[in-house]
Length: 215
Image (cartoon, rainbow, N blue to C red):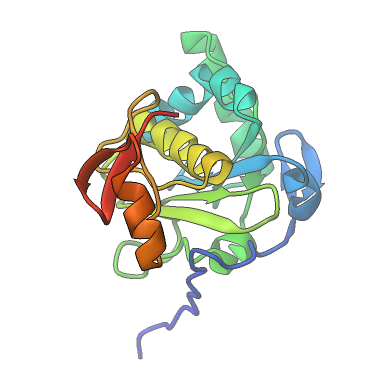
């Protein structure tokens, strides 16, 4: 009989599951870590592996950029705290890059299970490359999943965070391939009066329901 792994999948709009964990920067309670700031929680399959090393280094080299956006980082894999510390030390010695954010030691897969990071079709003892962007209210706003053998796109993670923050701040939507500084989409009108007002506006009008503006 095949082993069945309970694998709940948190959804966009859900409250991020809380947890207490041991990390490379000490024990933490996620809800406390999340309080007042955005958080990117991401998993990787294993320490001392090549793709994971490139990804973790990518997060580390752009850590200040995330800090400037009021965003904390926290990684996870199903490895011991001793393996994590040894890997952090190894990468720093060999490349000069320090993973200066917490990495969760999740040997019992407690956190990985809460966040649906275990995909039995890929592996039952390693997390896939999941990314959760969580807002300061503890709400999951964006989820990305990558398989074990494909690294993430760091530029897209940064762009997605900027897009979420821009949408929240200005109450707008973002079009295909949006980049900071480009025009945004204003919400469509919900009455005839609002439609007529829009037609008099200085928005870039594709049609009354699709209008763009600078912010």
